Length: 179
Image (cartoon, rainbow, N blue to C red; front, side, top):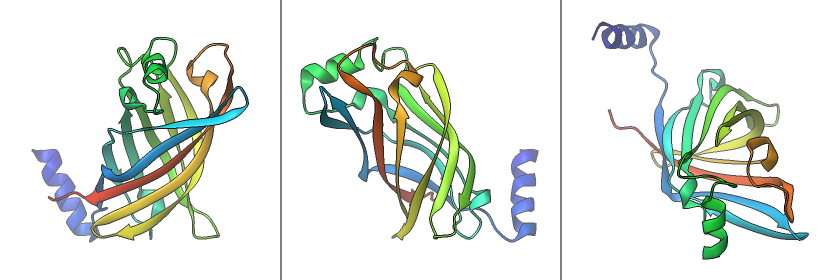
């Protein structure tokens, strides 16, 4: 109780509390593309959860702690989706969530933001960094960004016909937390 009271008093003294947001599945998309036999294919994930503190005027105070449901992988091919949920790919039985926690948020000269943080897929965590935009939307924000990762860095899939590099495209709609 003392910690909560101290937090509230500190916020009142400083004059501001960083706005808190929740990602929503409705209006959001998290898509990926990868080459298989040299042909681009892709899919998506749902099941967004997490907490986002964001202030475009003070990006350094912002932070992201978000995850998605690994079992929600959808490539519009049931057989492939089942294979991707299996042990050699996402192993959703043992690793049900894909998780990102920011360590730094900054603004660049062009008005875009850059986030750096830890992406964990299965038992592997790697630092990633990518630019994103933030557009005010009703009582939240729409965050958009694109980044590339190497699937092998995360122990996803073995040797196969798919490329090691894939691209992830984020369009994450948030709603302000109601206190």
